[in-house]
Image 1 (cartoon, helix red, strand yellow):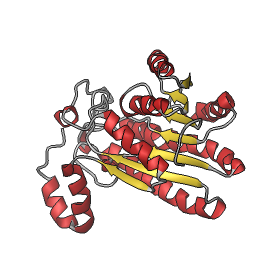
Image 2: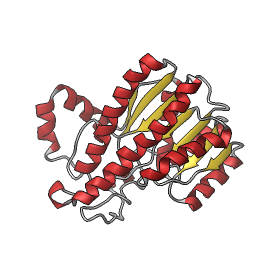
Image 3: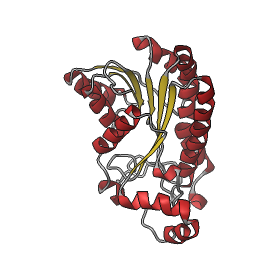
Length: 268
């Protein structure tokens, strides 16, 4: 897929951060957009900017935590333009809290949004892709989907689960249709509001931005890397600073050393 002009691209979590940046970058490339999140007013703002860039953008509010509503939402997405070419699963929620202090209900909520919400959209859009014989599923995971870290037990579990699901799905689709692609994206620290809305152990939001996020990559930089991965049909990409990228490779090839490093690393 060398050009995305005219392609119908559905982005979740499009009201801020990486999702918003993706909407603007794709708008400039002539894509037809469906933008989703819980906040309709923010989606209207993003839509206005996309339209100003000369693109067609339609809003489709959804709540990934309300999985029973997502089958109808998936049908509605297909009806907007008559098809969907690319699904970008970007919506999600983060976490800040020690496992011993985190209510099980919080772990369940994180898993419901990040994992079950994401795979529900995928499962209900998959027949559409199979019928058409092509499509592309892009899921924004995290470096935390490859390595765990303190204060992120529930979040890391949800992101690890996405890797298990989508790596398995990719293998299944290779037999059913070699024109349906699956891409996993693993961003490192990025300057978004993800840490502001991160859930604490009692379920309340953190309401402050981590220092690691404030000095992280820009959402636009990450969005450009994601678009490049879509065009190149990449299976998985890591988009992070040198610390996060190095951590992935140390974890892979020297897990004992990584375990010792992780004990004292600053993650907030």
